[in-house]
Image (tube, rainbow, N blue to C red; front, side, top):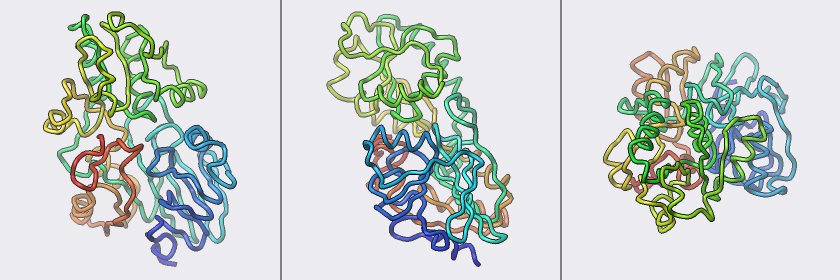
Length: 348
């Protein structure tokens, strides 16, 4: 069976007809395999959902107990048989519970990466290279200009600013699932042990991370704090909150934003970001090309992002590559790491 007979792009997403399921479908289907908990990949309303326990828990937190007809937790390294294919989950390194999905039919293995990064993250299992015949890669940062650098060095920039301006509050825009918890963990690893304050929208997911054994130190709700008492503090909030009236409760706030898009300084200026922090939970150009080469795949399918540049690069390496042109992905939680269709950032 040819690879595109095993997995094929359709309006609802990636469809596996021999297995009777879809991967990260954008509309309700009978059976869905979900790679991770971001809302552009994990939608409610499916008949059955297979995902890691963490992803199922995060979907339940966001959508309620009845987000799907039935659920099945699949552990990393576990293989389940669905129809004529074997499906195995492998760590993707994107956020807590994120998984690559390996689909095997006969001697052909296709790996759908979902979103991933191949650099260290203290809040989730590290990315695992899975040898395969076809690798389906994201391309959020699929241009050579995007090289994220060292996330720990970016956090040191933040803490240097906190020390330099003790009379000002520091507001860090970070996405509520994954990025916020990673930034907090990196702040702790840098030696900062003062309380870190949270916008109310961060509470549920951050508490869940802590319940899974992720050490984040002392966290406090910013709600109810006196303005003067927030001088010299660090607060994490959804990106949208750092540019609205909510910020008036802080003394002369320094606005920071943790995103791979902060590599483009014009985007930081457009958002009014005083302290851009280049920290992303997606692979950068080097991570994408390194991962593609390491999988040993001879065929690469590229989706949601800068598809054309990565397809061209694959061609220069002697690899067969094509864009999948799937729609409905990239706008994670309404404000994640992707441009909106208009060309403006969707809060990224």
